[in-house]
Image (cartoon, rainbow, N blue to C red; front, side):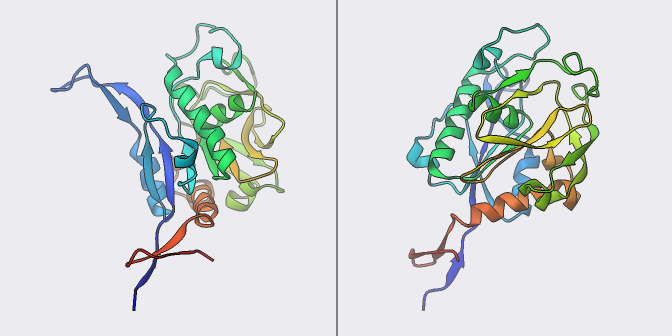
Length: 254
């Protein structure tokens, strides 16, 4: 009799590109991602699949994933949301911007759940027609300085949201950003804010799950602010993941 095993959900995790600074490969570009995402997803029961911006995925290939995580990283190119650089931003990566925006649309078309983290939230906002505040707190004086180091900030969460089910209606989160959402598409809704008024989380108004947060849950070991978000993503992903047997047969998870 064949032994039945349920495979871990396959979750695509986007990476960036950085120039190697020393050693034999000095001057060469490397695909980079902090290990915190891999650790958090594995702890939540998923199998991470690293997605490099140099390797475009077709819509059909994205549909084979059970969820997608759009990770943190450098600033988006202001031209992607119709503005000029104001001189305060970090060096953008237009190749990665285009890759992740296309990936988000492919995931939405295929009904694949999406989690956006920090830059990932900004990608989702811009992909739906939104714009960004290019420098905080200059553009929102009531917002604290969160672009120089990882900073603990308070967040108020809408009780009628998937995010509240994962972490509750109040949380202290780990933020590291100097930009934020100014506007977003109509198919998203704000489900968490800072006291300054800045949107700190977005969710899809309908369709497959989309959650985006302007903080770094992968850095937090506490269940309330960290594992809850990744556990919720893995639960949504598991609804898409088939069960596999050792002889190669497949049956849906129920």
